[in-house]
Image 1: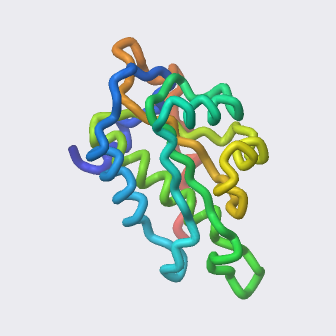
Image 2: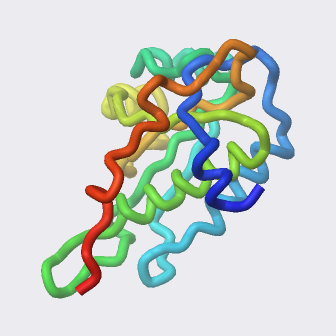
Image 3: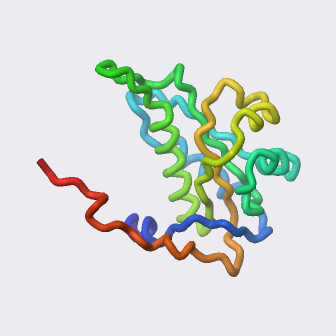
Length: 170
């Protein structure tokens, strides 16, 4: 499938089967993260994979949006290591981490898996449960796995606001 086809067909999966995700596919998703571009080639991000039932249960203590996924990725950034625009002090750590998350989601879809971007979680609690996350800005969680047979896109998924998303070329 070409890129635009993939971008059009990919949707937020909110119901997963209990089929495990193969380690090879997890590796490819992590490779996609590593291939993401970064401001000034600094790469201030980190990705964790929560795969064990114990780890996923801890994550579930911080959000109701795990959707029964067999794998949950956490993408984080270290603002102290990111590029900062000199003219206004804008730190690009969250931008770099967001690009990583996007790469991961698109690779996930290309592998026949589903995922969704979750920003609604208790970051301080997640850091308490996983102390190794402490120095990072936790950007998003990505529940990932094989979509359940009866899973489908939300009714609003294919609605777009048309030209309002585009700007005029000046």
